[in-house]
Amino acid sequence: MGLLTASIFLGMMVGGYMWGYLADQKGRRRVLVMSLTVNGLFGGLASLAPWFWLFLLMRFISGIGVGGSLPVIFSYFSEFMPRLRRGAMISCLATFWMAGNILAAGLAWLVIPRTWVQFFLGALDFKSWRVFVVLCSVPSISSALIFKLFMPESPKFLMEANREKEAIQVFRLMFKLNMKGKEKALPEFGLHTSSTQKGDKDKSRSLGSSKERLANILKKALAPIKKIFQSPFRSRSIPLLIIFYSISFGYYGLWMWFPELFERTEDGGSPCANVSRPSVAANETCVTVKTAVYTDGFITAAANLPGNIFTILVMDSIGGKALLSGSLLLSSLSVFFIYVVQTKAQSLILSCIFSGVSVIAWNALDVVGTELYPTKLRSSALGFFTGVGRVAAIMGNLVFGRLVDANCAVPILLVSALLLTGGLVGLLLPQTRQTELT
Image (cartoon, rainbow, N blue to C red; front, side, top):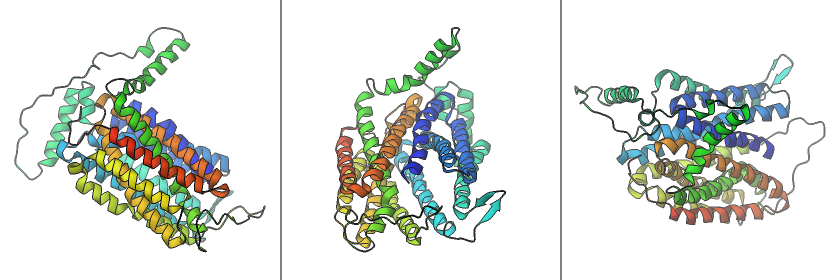
C-alpha cells in the first residue's frame, strides 16, 4: 500500500513545480490541457499493466500530470475572480476536490467488489479493479477536451505576457457572458500592466556548448524558487513551506491508513493495540477487501461537506489566515484523540471530524497561496509548495507503513504535533483578505 500510494505522490512531486513553472512561462490553459492529458492517458494505461512494477510506473507518470493540474487550476481560476468574492469562489472550486473523493469512494464501492465485472483482454485478466482504474481516468481526459475547446486563457497571464489584444478579447467574452440577456455595450477601456517580460529572450538558446545551454536552462527554471525565498517574499514563503509540509504529511499519511485503523477497532480497543494482520498464502494473487472499507471511505469523504460549506460562507469575511491556523489547531486535537479511541464508531466519528475540519485548512491554503504571490510567480510558487507537500505525503505514508505495526502511536502523535506546528506558524502569514492580485 505504501509503494502504491508513494508512486503517484512521487509523480506529483516531480510534476508540481515543472508544470507550475511552465504555466508562468507558456500560459495556464495550455499547461492545464497537457497535464490533464498526461494524467488521464497514463492513468488509463495503468489498467493494462500486467506487472506490479509497470503499474507503479504508469501511476507515477499519471501523478506527474496530477501535479500540474492542482497548482495551475487555482492560479487560472483566481485570475478571473473579482476581489470581493475571490475567497468564496476559490472555496467553491476546492469543493470539487471533496466531490472527487466522494465519487472515487462511491465508484470503488460500486465496481471493485463486483466479481462479475471481469473479462479477458487477450492474455490479460481484466478484473473489476482494472475497470475502476479506467473509470478514474475519464474526468481528466474530458476536462482536457473542455479546456482545449471552450476555455480562454487567463487575462492576467496575457497582460503579464504583453499579449494585450488577446487579453481584451477575453475581457470582451467575459462581459458578453456576464451581461447575457442585458442590453449593455462594453465600455471603452485600456489595459495597464507592469510586466517586464517584453522582449525577454530565451537565453538558453544562445550559442555555446550543450553543457552551457543545459546550465542556462536549469538556471532559468530554478530562478522562480530563488525569487520566492528572497525579499519581499521570504517572510511568507518560509511559513508557507512549513505549513504545506505539516498538513500534507499529516493529512495524506493519516487518510491513506484510515482503513487499516478502522479494521483494528472492529473488535474493540485502541487502533494501536490490535496489531495482528491476516496472513496471505504464497499462491494468493489478490486479497479480498471487506465492503466496510468502501463504506467508511465514502462516509469519511462526505464528511468534508460541512467544512466546504463553512469556508464558502465565511472565507471573504474572516479571511484565509485565521481559517488556516484555526483549522490546523483543531485538526491537531482531533488526531490526538484518535490514539485514545476504543471502538470503531468512535474512530469513524473522529476521522470524520478530522476530514471536516482539515478541509477548511486546505481551502484556506488554496486561497492564501494564490494571493501571496504576483502573476509571474503564482503558478511556480504554488507548484513548488505542492511539490514539497508531495514529499511530505510520501514520507507520511512511509512512516505509517513502517510504524503502524511496530508502534502506531508514534505516527499518530507525530501528525498531531506537525498540525499543531503548522497552525502556530500560520499566524506569521500576512493578511491577504480581499486584496487585489498583482
